[in-house]
Image 1 (cartoon, rainbow, N blue to C red):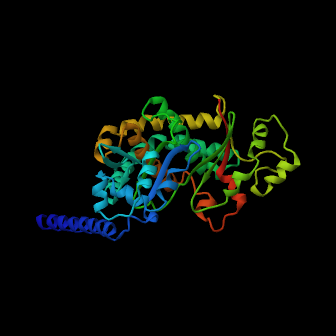
Image 2 (image 1 turned 90 degrees about the vertical axis):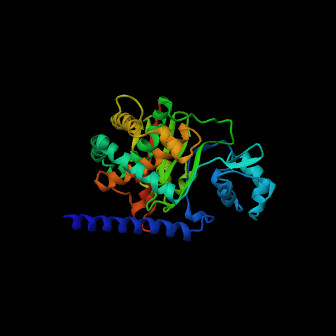
Image 3 (image 1 turned 90 degrees about the horizontal axis):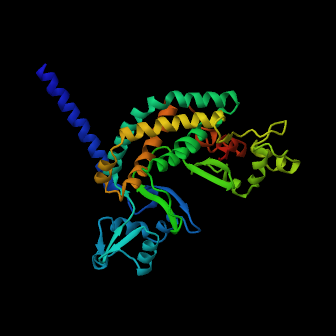
Length: 365
């Protein structure tokens, strides 16, 4: 038994060494100044300004941000022989991407290296695996409702864009663990970098709003079936969604290729009316209530903030929850609660009629 135990220990040590070596090799061979080697995530809103990614991706601003991660004086930065101009530093500072204190320039957004990203994702996956059993039934109930409405293909986007990456933020703000956006700044929210990229990108959510209506769609960098929606007359769908208008031929024709209307001229994309007797909304709220409670139980915010050097508790929650969110989506797919929409699964074969699986309308209170 002693010999077997020793052999098992040796095997485990070899495995850990190989795992460590591969991570180290990736770190040594990766060009960190190459934008393509980073996953940048923005939980933010633009206040009539450029998106922060537009600023970071210009010139060699990414290299400057990486160089200033631990803080440097202008003289120390010059000694690194990194090409830069004072105007670049001023631009980065005006966008709150760096800060200057007592003559020291320091990056003001999280940039997690390979080791930090690996460690953070181990923690997020551990949390997601504990949270998932608590919300699985409610998620299955929501999917079952969409099946009954003949919109099962919208399950992925509803759970991602509306529930797990939508309503949850209002809940977090209500609970005070995420700050409300300051709309007086050039942009509001949080922006951060991790490496390497995840193997699958859940994408994000775009929205066109008017009054208490919002037309939303789940997008991915790997598909373009929703690109033209920015130019469509989606506002014309709002009174139709509330049944205050009958779609005319012009509107039906405009959205015919997208499959937004059935043969009876009725909207086919899900409509979520955020009132108590709306079944889809009620199911979503149940998921959020459970998710928020279990997330707070499984998350040590202060420990994470100290471990990764996040600026504050709000930033800590935003960054960590996004990783938990991606892990939860992976688990929902793995457990076959949802399936990838065609636009995500086979983007090269998807057409604009598949956009309907990514779209929905929200009528807020």
